[in-house]
Length: 194
Image 1 (spheres, rainbow, N blue to C red):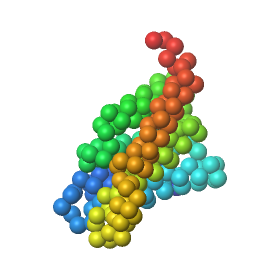
Image 2 (tube, rainbow, N blue to C red):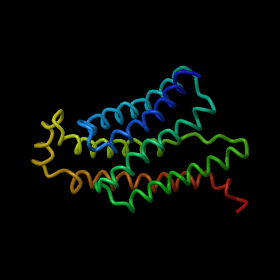
Image 3 (cartoon, helix red, strand yellow):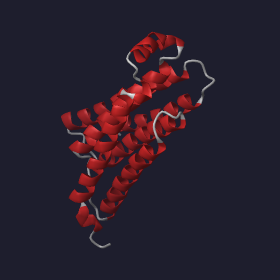
C-alpha cells in the first residue's frame, strides 16, 4: 500500500478516534483533543491527494477510498455537532443525503467498471465543511483550560453558533447542495436505466 493510501486509511482510523474523544464529555480536555485529531485527519486529506498526484501514485483504491474517508470524517463531525446542538439537524440531514447520493453514484459507476474521482467543486465543499467543523470545535475547546484564551475572542465578537458559525454553516450547505447537483448532472448517464 502506497503512502497516499496509508494516509487515507489513517484518516478513517482518526475519524473513529475523533468520535470517541468528542463523545467522552467527562474526559478532561476531550474537546481540545478532538479538535487536534480532526485537524490532523483534515491535513491527511490534503496530503494524500497531493502526494498521489505529485508522485503518480493515483490508484483505484485511492479514487474510491479518499472521498469515502472524507465523508466518514465530515459526517462524524456534523452529526456530533448536531448532538451538541450547535448545528441544526435538518442541515446535517441534507449534507448526509448528498454524501449518500454521491456514494451511490460511485457504486453504480463501479458496477459498470468506471471509477468516479472527486471533482473540484466537491473539494471546495470539503474545505468549507472542514473549516466549519474546526470553527465549532474551536468554540467548544475554548471552554477548556488549554484553549481558554480563545473564549474571550468568541465572546467579544459574538461569534459562536449564531454569527460567523451560522455563515459558515450556510456556505457549507450551499456548496454541498450545489456540488451534489453538479455531480449528479455530470454523471446522469449512470441513472439512464431508471
